[in-house]
Structures are given as structure tokens and as C-alpha cells.
Image 1 (cartoon, helix red, strand yellow):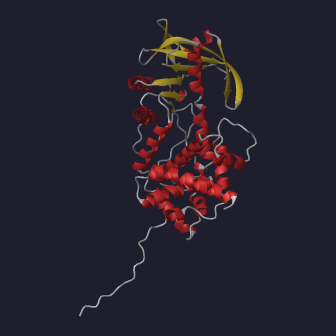
Image 2 (cartoon, rainbow, N blue to C red; image 1 turned 135 degrees about the vertical axis):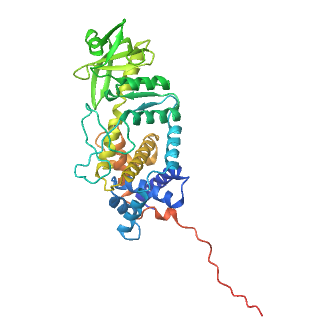
Image 3 (cartoon, helix red, strand yellow; image 1 turned 90 degrees about the horizontal axis):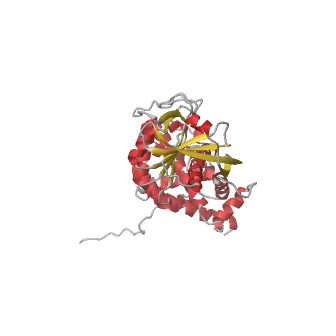
Length: 385
């Protein structure tokens, strides 16, 4: 067995082990489809069914493989698999995790016949969906938050300016969750029994706590300040954390986490800056796995395809937390031939290295799902006289 074949085998085993943890409650054809999708997407770094079928190397016509994958996708996302995935996430995450809430548009400029098409606007304007059961963006966010609270219990929810909404603050208070939310310039706060704009409080103060910060790929020198205020929605005491030196106008962050020291102020600010990870996550799904280049048309199939790409992202996360001395991880990084030794967001590197190793495969994963047939029995005839 050659060196490359050994790593190809190990990586296939890792992918199939990960796939089986999520699809264990499904039928054998569905488990095979799960493995085919995860292996094909990771090997091809594409969500196109034709690219996936190329990597499966099945001994049949390519159109037959594409039709089989397409037929499975139109069934949607199996609830059993989704629940198994969430249970796996629960095992991975620590107590009181940080949960980043944001949304992203999927843009298909040439697509005119897709279901529930809507306009894509910039983040400063409200957006809506044409989907039949859609009510509002808040309801979608509330549903996700409720599922996260049910799964993890206590957590810290981090959100950008698009979620600066009285309903959002009331919902988080009702759920008993921690939060750090960036405020807009329109937000009013109660300070010393007087309603004032958050921007007025921002302009009155200066940052006193110094914080060296790596943000959006650059090093910055930020200065922090804070003041106890009350929010319009609940009249509960919260803290306004002000961040100077990062953007043109100082950032205004609202948090209900207790602030008693400089470390508490720094911790609240760092929680918000961790939000940039979700932007990189969206970009990775669209660039590495070409999510906006899909060809399936049914909304149920598009949502299912998004789920399988999400599983591939989870697999990259699974590989990223392995020890730096792990032989397979070391080989993945070496195969990627990265320019920089260390990066803040390693998913691009891991995805490239995984597809590079799997490019040596002479066959797909079909032999891992061989049908077990009973031993051959010779037909015997009994003569009755």
C-alpha cells in the first residue's frame, strides 16, 4: 500500500465514520446517499451533482448517478438525521456556548424559475421571503434561538445591528439568555433617568481600556469604555460597551452580562468580535463548495443541499480540533501547500487538503456498502416414490 493510498483510506474511513453517526437511524439506501454526498462534496469541493458523481466513480452511466442523487435530494432533509446532527453538536460544544446569529442571501442572478424567488437587498434594508410559511425574519431567528436554548440551555447570543430590535431584547430576556448585540444609531437608551440616543453617550465618552485586537485579517488597537443604561424594551439594567479605534464611528454594543472589571469589558467586546467567524463560515460555503452555483431547482432540494454542505463544514470543524500531531491532519495541511504557516480561519486549507488527498482515490466508496448476500446453496431435488 503506497503512502498516498494509506492516507486516502484513512480519510475515507473518517468521512464514513462521521456520516454514519448522523445517518445511523436511516435505511441503508439513505445511509449510502449520505455518505455519497459528504464524500462527493468534500472530494470535488463542489455542490454540483455532476461533479459529485465524478468523484463517486460508480460503474454505471453518469446520468444514472446524477438522477439517483437528485431523487434523494427532492425528499428533503430527514428529521432523524437533523436531530442526530444536533445531538452530535451538543457533545462537541462546552457548557454555556457562544451562539452567533446571522442570515445570508443565496444569489442566483440567472435563475428565473426557482421557487419562492425574492429580491436581495443590502443589510441596511429589511428583507422578506416569498416562501409560503414565511412570516418574518424575527420569527425565523426566534425559532433558531428556541432550538439552541433547548439544545444547550444557557448560552451567549451574539448578533449584529440587523437584530437591534425591541422584540429581540424582550425575547432574550424571556428566555433568560445572555447576549451581546451591536446597536444602530437610532437606538435610544435610558441613562440617569433621561432618554438619550446611544450616539450621544458614545460621543460623550472616551475609551480607557486598551485592547490589541486582530479583526478582519488586520491588527488593531482598540479602546473600550462602558456605561450602565436601560433598554427601551424591558427597562432592565444592561451595559453599553463602546469600542473606539476599529471603525469610522465607534461601535456600540449592548450586553446584559455583568461588568465589574476591565476583564469583563474586554470579554464582552471579544464575544462580539468572534461574530466575524460566521461571516467567514458563509463565505466558505459559497466559495469552497460553490453553494451559489447549484443546479437543483426545488426549494426542498436546495434546503437539503444546504444541509449536506453544512455537514461538510462540520466535518472540517471536526478535523480542525484534532491534535496538531495527528498524522492525518498533518498530511491534509501538507497537501494543501499553504503559503502561511498559521491562519485564523483554517477551513479553506483543510478543504483543499482533503480534496487533494481524495484525488488519489482509484474508486469511490461504493465498496464500503457491499450488499451481504447469503451463501450459495445448490438446489436439491427430492424424489418421492
